Image: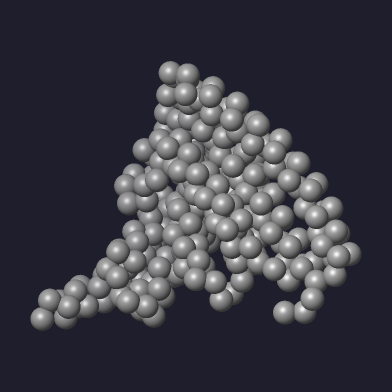
Length: 268
């Protein structure tokens, strides 16, 4: 490694300190909201606070990623411990969102109707779409900072799979069709979010299938791919997109047959 100049170190510290201050401010907000959450008895109000807290965790993780990126850019040093801290913040955010919105993918599209009824006027369609986009950007930021040869990249397959399901569960399916008119406020973002959810679920299913094929053929990976594919098919059925739904059924049946064949072979 080339010798790092004092000027480079000083500039790195100067830039990092700005984001460390921002990180500290968010951590203060997190502590405050966590205390409020512990004393919140109403389940719907708690769900709202969990989403707000998840937003803060994501914001904190983005500052951690930026601090790491500055180190990479100025010193050519990748500090994995810091990156792991940021990844843990992402996982905390996901857990909170799953508690608030659900983590399911293989059941009804409207298991969280009552939560959505409560949240309807608290998070606009525009906010929901931009939130999922920004969360995805933060995840991509971390993947870039880890580097393409990092052992931790495999962990992001699970993270992105959970985000894909959250992108579905943040949609109010009970009202979606009824509000599918350009004249109703938020129409563009409702459609954008639905298309984004379909895209994320499809990409995640393919990632799990590829992981199953190219690594150690863990049945759980293929089962997750099947879960996501089944979820995507249910969305297409709900939207009356018949050809797309039939295509997903073919994919599901093909992958299921592959898994069943492999499981039989493993038992021999």
